Structure formats: C-alpha cells, structure tokens
Length: 113
Figure 1 (spheres, rainbow, N blue to C red):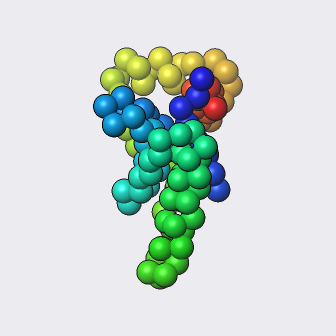
Figure 2: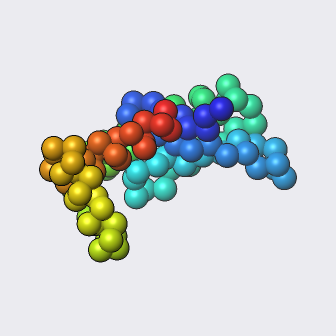
Figure 3: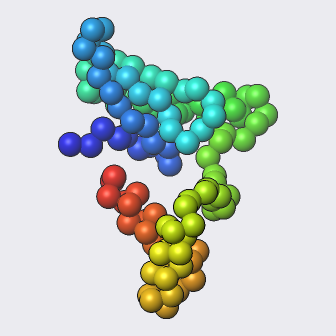
C-alpha cells in the first residue's frame, strides 16, 4: 500500500489521524507549507488536487514561480570509509562516482513509486 499521492509533478505523503478521524498530507519538496485533509479517500484526492492547483494559482497571482524544479546538485557528507567504498564500487562498474551515485539514488527512490 502506498501512502504517496502525485499530481502535476507534486507529491505528498498521506497520513491518518485516528483521534480526529481524518486523512492529511503536505506537499513534499517545497518550502511553502501546503497541506490538505479530508475524512474520506475520495475527499482526500480532491483536497490534494485542489491544494496543488491553489498553490500554483496563488504563486501566479503573487508573481512568483511555484517551487518545483531541482538543480540536480546534491551535497552531503559521508564517512571517509563510505566514500572510499563508493569510489571503488563506481570504478568497478566503469562509471564516475556521480553516475554511480545517481544510479543508486534512482533505484532507491523508484522503489517508493
């Protein structure tokens, strides 16, 4: 069972609040806090699409571009030993470290779909 919804290139993770008996979610990958909720699955789908459409429209009215594209540059720190093993793994596959890392990240993130 997937708890991720996607619409117009935007995604959200859906959760359930047992106390309030509602489903809720928040758009992922953007700094603006865009959330939605409903008490049924069909209502949640509609609320999610409405939240995305409202976000795009609000940005347009405010004269700003909706946050969506990513640069493709990722910077993070890892241990020297992990770095060494990654470089060796890439070399053994005959690709650059960037190509190897992209492949590994792609495999890990498509498992979510």
